Length: 272
Image 1 (tube, rainbow, N blue to C red):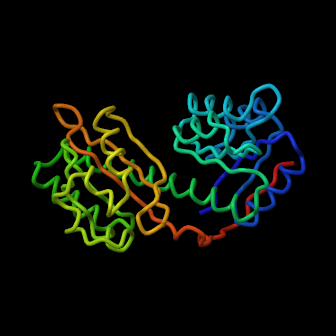
Image 2 (tube, helix red, strand yellow):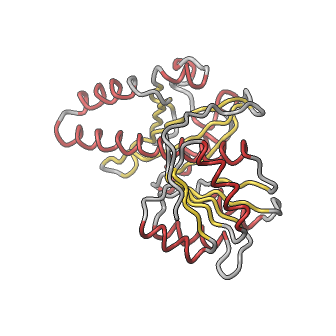
């Protein structure tokens, strides 16, 4: 799906190159030479993904990331740096559910990073739809009917859907779990999230614990045991006593070293 992407870099040649790579993938791409210009564009346009250099005059990429988190937290940020060991940049972007790339950047690398960000946006939108439907069910139907409707809804979504109780035990896994993760749902139901490391990766327990502890959504990219990268989104389901359950949506990519499939759509427009 085509997205609105903003490139932020003080070097004109890098802006042009990255813009061409992403326009070829069908995205609408804008460009800014400084963080202040980027913030102005973000206030005017429905930008969904920002690709920014870390080292820039005045406001740098990390400061831009922090500004975006304050006024537009849904926007995904990908930081680029010639020093990929800069802990401050890496830590900041990971805590925001973003990504980072080291220079020099290939066309494949930037396109894969933007595709991952777009996939995370899709997961978050799907989670919002799930929450809206569940809230509607809670207000209008009995609990038993709510549960039956939840399962029917989850079994008709293409993403893997998992549900954990407030103790972190898996209550439900939809049919897509076997297709997306290669694991039969029966192997997960009844297991504690903290004990699913061998099947799904150690960070699953962390995601469930974060939501139960903070009562807020938690997202991130995790490596599955078979080498594939998976984009996870954990979100709370509220009950009378607080967080009653934790939902998880996951989309798994290809194994490390394999190219992600691209779905080019209509071309974006380059700003004047």
